[in-house]
Image 1 (cartoon, each protein chain N blue to C red):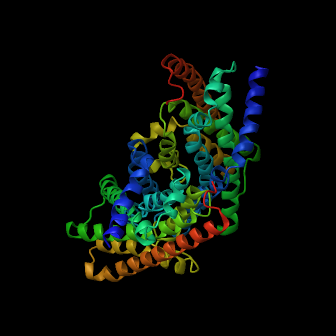
Image 2: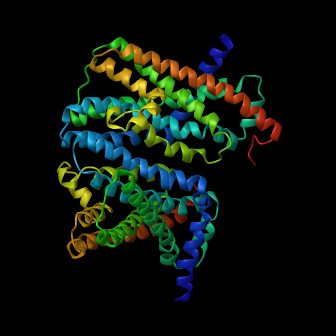
Length: 262
Length: 257
């Protein structure tokens, strides 16, 4: 038990710290702090030109959606990075239990995703001039954290493909783009074409963003608890799928000797 | 002069082929701007201003040219550094600008795939038909815009020569240029203080020329301003290359190790 917890917490943190490139302020500041603000500005102005929704709609949607950058890229790099550093066979050859080994790597990523989204939400609101009721701040923070957790589940699926494909960065970008279109970030899910809506409802972030918007509009927490529950459930499904895929690709890579395909 | 043109031509063709083989620069270069174009199309179609779809489609098509340039150009020198070819290129008798310029030009040219894909996507998925009023001017405006964006990339690549992780800066510059150059939003929506920044950027004039040529208007003045600013970037970049190389040689810091 203690061993598993150590692998979960210490292993996860060490793996995250090994992404030293991400920890460099020269990358962190432009990627995690500057870019989300400009994404908010871009879509807020496009929204104004299109005469579609309020500024608040775009600030909340884009800020929370930007949690996907750390959640997808950092998770993907925890596997892809091990391969580049040639430590992947050592890790997969170790007797460490796989659930804490893989899921433990997700924990710092969830925190990272939350911090990025929260920063974008606060600074974006100040720049655009969006006011949120003081009482809604804590519930919106919770919705943001739940969204980051849920998106990290999808990040784990992305990371699993890192055992099979070389271009994890390309895959992460593609998933980011899909989330941007389908999750009701800039166009409400109800306004999307009919065939897109079931997909939207099966993706992380959709319900979390919806809950945060309702909270900002003055809804009580009890009114959005269901949405957050669905968001958590979706995240759990992706997390389980990601874990399953990791085990599957691990087995396949042993069988076909493709672990060091790079 | 002939030597310089030959260098530019061969360098451009070689780098265009290299970029075409990359999944990141090729496949993602086409797909990435399509995501944003799709959102913009959906927003304008759903919103109160669906007549702006053609205006948006033209702007969105140029977004890909900038996307294919911003990240790649900012890390162009770093890429040579990783490959261990930077010292060889810097030591060659050819002026370093003639080596770097075709690289960034190839990066912006690869954006033509994205431009075509975005216009086709708008036509097929959103029914945005493009009737070009002044085909000759349009045919001129597109390459001039691409070359001027390549020159922005050239200047950017030289400016960030001492920045190891310059790709992150290039990545962060993607949205600001889309925004400030009016690719999706008319400049009149921005605060007054933003406009001088927009005017100093060649893509602003490039997209204006493309729109004027396509929708009907006087594209020529915008085209000339775009070309002039692009030329200004090229001259500034060439002057900067000399300074940067001299400094790197005297400090032995070319490899940044």
